[in-house]
Length: 368
Image (cartoon, rainbow, N blue to C red; front, top):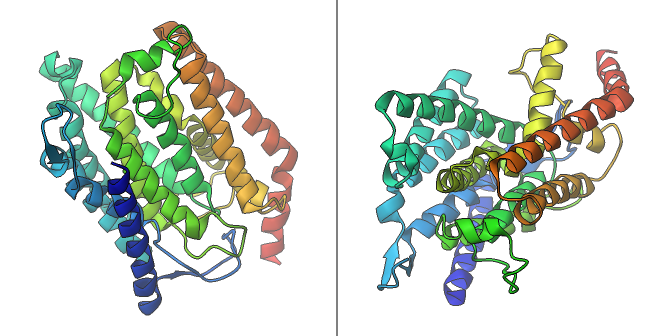
């Protein structure tokens, strides 16, 4: 397996470097403006490597779960991969030529529908034994949550390293929960959660996704002004689709929706910022610099890498606490998720009350 992953790493690195030549040839770049957190021209769309990594995963023969020879994931996950290509392809086109919101939303809902075929109907879960009207309600609610989460993750892509760092903060705990990463040898201290949900997804899926993120990080997780490329919508939307699929499988395997805690830092920042902008009577479709991480990087002058690491480490700490410290009961899980949301939302409000005036001063300077 190590040799297989090494070959995949080489393929993805070569693919990223090839894309840079293509982007440079066709002038696929991101020019800074008054809403940007960068000051130089940077190649756009480097996050296309996330979708490419999953295509490579789907075509690579890995040992079958039954131990009988090798199989390719494309045979089982083709609807998920088609959905990924659809949503990444539309997002990549939007990176080059801006598309109406309606087109993007249709593509996102369609892609999520293809993902759900793998999640709900292929996977043998409690969902399959529910009445049809409950199935419809669950699917519609899940569609809204997943499309909303995709757009929040996309909105949060604004500084060097934050998309890659946060993706690792989600994928690594998922790999641990799957039981194929870190193991606690003493069964007396091993988390009951780890014992209960091992194997909810093929470990190769998570490992290859992590490899793709690490390859992208080589060219993006750098101090301000030194990034070779940005993820673009193709990257942020693509990695959102990849992470949500794995989280969806975990939720269905455990019948526990509180595993959305793996996205809680982005979720609270994104939702609080939307509420803040609604209170300011702003057009939510317009670009802005009002997220907490943007104020840190711009008005407070913190380095992009530092801010990205704050979000990454915070999400990792919250996720590891869920895995290793919180008892595996519904009451504890819901209590923990609720407490984390309240604490993060409170921190967001305090931060904005203290520093948002700096952003207002910045906006006034643009009007002069």
